[in-house]
Image 1: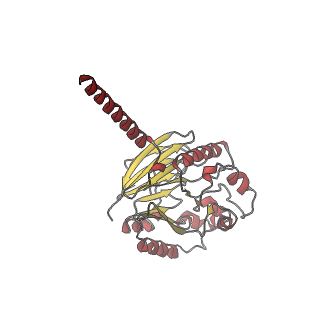
Image 2: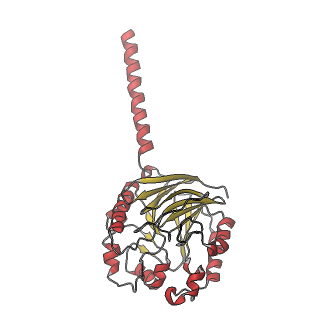
Length: 316
């Protein structure tokens, strides 16, 4: 009888160890195994003319996309640095985009935004490339798309065109060619899209930071004046951007600001009270959404997880 009791205890112990192992596996396995989650990657300022940093980032981007089973990629602009891209048939599309971001896991939609260097070139070329590529998605200079987290929960992505708002660019139109863009029309469109959406999450993507702490530029007054009030009005929880060649996370007014401009180059960051994380490093962002939370993880050009944060969805 004593032997049988010991056997029973031993069997139960083995069963508990198996359950514990499964629990640990479930906790450490990728978010790709969660049925009610959506993973996507964010990269900005990646137009590095095929340089080493751009290629290193592309390798790590592919690895994380494969691990997380990412559904799509968001770009925050400056898809081509310096003088932008002249037309949709330029050979640099192959040498600086297709041949670099060539991992099978990156053959997913790339929802692209425009940056100031894209405006130095021909922004229309990047729109037209959508008709030539199976993965490059830029239907207009600003646009929106809705993605599903599960059958009942969706997320709205609003890609805005920030360069026409910047006073310095408007004063130097011979370089940036922004005066033909009607910012009041765009503001009306942003307002109407955010107002009409019933998505659980609303995420706005732009090139320029609303808030950032860095020596070169920092906060963007024009966006604080024109864009920020709309984010507050409609309960936007996340703003994604680039422009500053850093990885930085800030929080203002219940809005989470992710600066992710390290796609091909980096510069030093500056500390400030509102900065929760800042690193002068190349890198990109991985974001996983569930119906109730968002997890943002910054990776550097070596694939290191350099920062992660958890955001809970507002009831607004």
